[in-house]
Image (cartoon, rainbow, N blue to C red; front, side):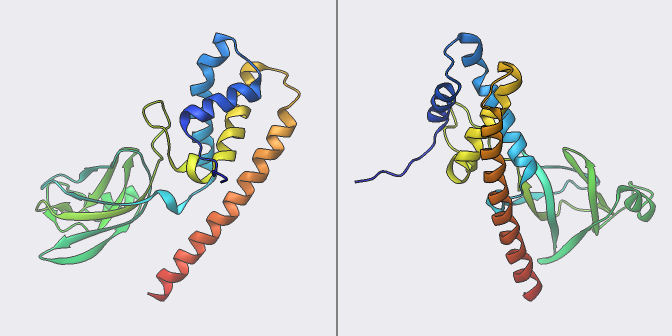
Length: 211
């Protein structure tokens, strides 16, 4: 019986070691860094619906600043529940919110939000009560480690992760003649993933438009 290949963090570390054909401690100690850098590069190149997440939380009364979830990457939409009814909170620029609601000590039902910084949102009006809200957002994938053996990359993009890690090793190893081959393999895989990702996003937008 044929067993399907399933990548784990440990198997990826071993694959990288074998592809690099290096056993020295300096290189082996760097393999987790190569993997982490590859994860960041792949995540920056594709938006995949596999990490589209719904979060629910409660605002703080009289405070226009809201903490973003851990590993937040990009907000898709936000809504608020007031007296049992759900209302959209619309995205606007920070400057628009400050002009619309210049005195943050005055309160009301939030109608707009913006990215205040990388870890916080800003809403206006400042919430009167501790309103419940829901946010749809893209989440950064939980990084691989010896304690976290699998994630989206190992399941759906193992080849991209392998070749991406090998490419990240190149500046450290220097002058590896296999670089063009690994780059070509990686580019082809990423192009396929991006095409699939665009199709999924287009399908989602079409469904939303019909709803």
